[in-house]
Image 1: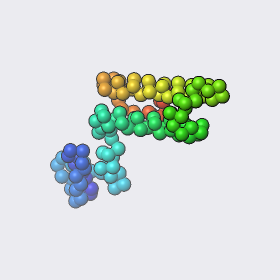
Image 2: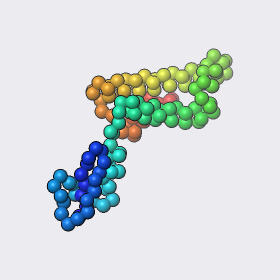
Image 3: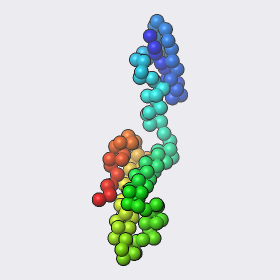
Image 4: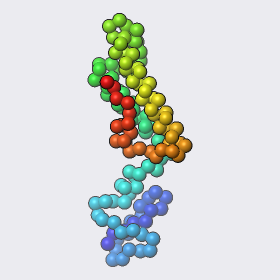
Length: 129
């Protein structure tokens, strides 16, 4: 019989015929430490960094799709007669992502919003249309 006890965000495992006091039985394949690591034990700074990394990944993928190598390159084209409209649209989209992220982080810090899963966060980001 496998069991575990969480101490300082670490799963301490036990394997025996009985479940010791304070331990919880678990099914092999649902390893406790993997479940613990997947939970949001993050400092506010780690949360901000994680969300920033996620939105920058989305932005950089869209820029590559549109054949831009960076936001700095987009900014260079902002007033161009040929590419200016597209550049302005990209920059407005990026600003809307920053605003969304700022509101979310503020709500998390104020305790009015829980930390979203990556999927929830990515689905909530403003879309480029």
